View 1 (cartoon, rainbow, N blue to C red):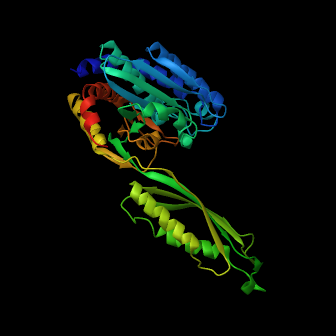
View 2 (cartoon, helix red, strand yellow):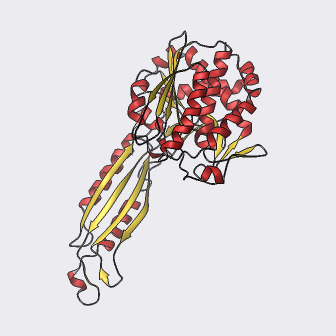
View 3 (cartoon, one colour):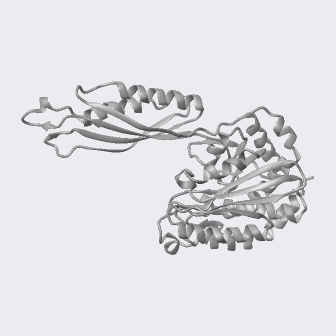
Length: 393
């Protein structure tokens, strides 16, 4: 039986300690490219993991911060993967300019929501379970990533073998601003459009030219029309360049296009439509090249994911929480883990918002209940592991 009220009380008594740990992690610059800073934050967090009883396996990386796998063994059968990341999007100097501040019950600072508080929620949830002797899991693997903000180019290969052995994964990104958790994430990708034309004098011999910008403009219109081709599909032209002067027929134009989609089928259909557009011509004499493509498959809500949501809402009801589960257009490590056929639930950190901005915040009132929820989820998955395993992905 999950001692959920006792866990909540235990965590409440340690809220000040949680905030001290949060301040220590937030007040160090750790943008993805700042290996020194990410490693400094990583050492602090690894010390706390080790003190909580985890066994550590470190993965040194030359370009990015060093990753870490923290493992805790139990006496049950369930294998549960927790995933969080150390890096932020903020440039060096941000931590000194905007150190963590507590304004009433709102905590402001770079990375408080995305996602230092989620990392600490994972740590404190496991500490609470250990305190009460709730160890009905086989093992908890806590993977600490260092380059999630640029799509985990190195770490995704490191956590993949661990994920393949797990029964479920809980990603510790923050809950939505309204408290909802994330049961699905869109897939996405970036396409690079390059149009080659033919340069000419725009006033004297325009007929000798082939306007790459005009060709690109027509292509952009066609791609923009793909918005909504399936529910949740978006196409956004975010960067464009071309030309050298107003009196020159341009021979080169470029654009970058972000795409998002809700299902694998929708992503495949969108990719086919974009590739077809590459072969069509709107301006004679031009040539179109489209590179890039889909980079992340969607984290789709499956029957097993729905069961995880049911477990989460059951635990939440015991502590007076209520929330829905949603799909979001943002991506996370959950996308890569879901590709392996593993049920994934995301947004299990405390409530926060305005990520990647000067007003990024954490709702201090959410720290204890959301960490209690996470502890209860680990215990619930441990108890109901066989039923979860029986659900067809």
